[in-house]
Length: 502
Image (cartoon, rainbow, N blue to C red; front, side, top):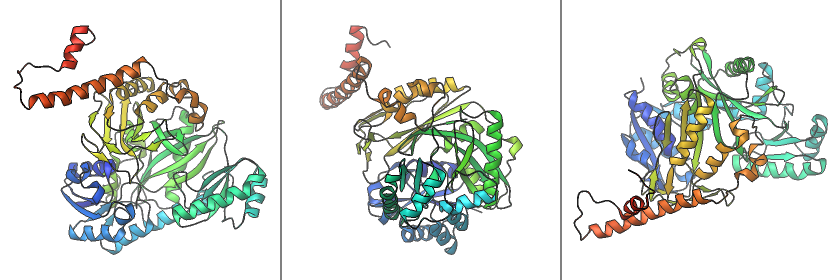
């Protein structure tokens, strides 16, 4: 029985796992780099251990250090979160060898589905439709050109071990093949240590739709319906929602059945995701399988009412699924926005720094998965995502209204974030009417550019003035006693001018 879990990750996902452990009566152990000594996940855990320096290779990607920490704290299991070592078969195998339960699929499954070429072949054998393309490794640009001519342009060159848009190149013309082939191979080797590349037909105006699945050690597999993930920039998701506004009843159930078939074909255990591309004619194709928890898992939890992390732990502990497919229903609508410390006006450059003030939105149907706090310094060494804002409502239109309100309430001072960019996304007509696809960002580039106006400027001035007043009051309070009913000069000014009512 699992009684103590080491979370081999950082930030909001580490806290998310620890919360599930706390509710289940399981102790948690945090690991952290020297850069994360003051991170909230360190304080949240029952126990904590520094595992290395600021670079991920010295800490969160260092298998030996993580295993040593697991032995030192006498844990029963290790949860990898997502990113870092979450889809590393060698890590999963090492955990088992050292006597720890790996909360995730078997390493053989991870290897099989981590290689995109072998995954495609597995899906073909299971009767799951795949995008037309190669089934074997391409050995030269000449081979790639021959395949491109056969399936027709445009095509995508993809790293077989890839993910996150790395090792991926769009090719629209014959004279681009050689250059793009070498570029994809080079990036694949640098990112994944494997330069295997394959060709896949590029689908025009597709939707990126994924299905959440759960499988136990007894062959039981279910799906927990769909998530629309088509709002992407350079193949990185920004906004997700569930259910997809593009799917109808019949297509949703057909895709769900294929997702279950795909998971059964590889004997999947744990929580995973089957990702599909759906063209404008509602034909769907297998894209890849993620053998881990997804960043966007909260919107599924909100819509179907299932705690996916708890299910992961129960499955890893050898317990059979108590959920049955006929019991899973979608209720209402959920949307997630990824909150990142990045400058959207300067090519989305990371924007590390100290958070001097933060005001998080609250209210009915509003959830925040985050790890930051006032005074915390966002390190420059890791992913810029600092949290996720999730809303739920009974209808999609109400969920959009709630997200708009929540994004307006969300204030982070001291560094640049993408919150205003997210507000503009929510207000784009294509998003509001649900007619968008993976071309959304490019197609609406003009609408998404910042338009300085009174509303934004006044908001900035209010935050700046309030913070200046706060600092001035700190100085005054050092020497002058304050009456119990004292209010700030900023608030007093607002009352006098009639622009603030309390």
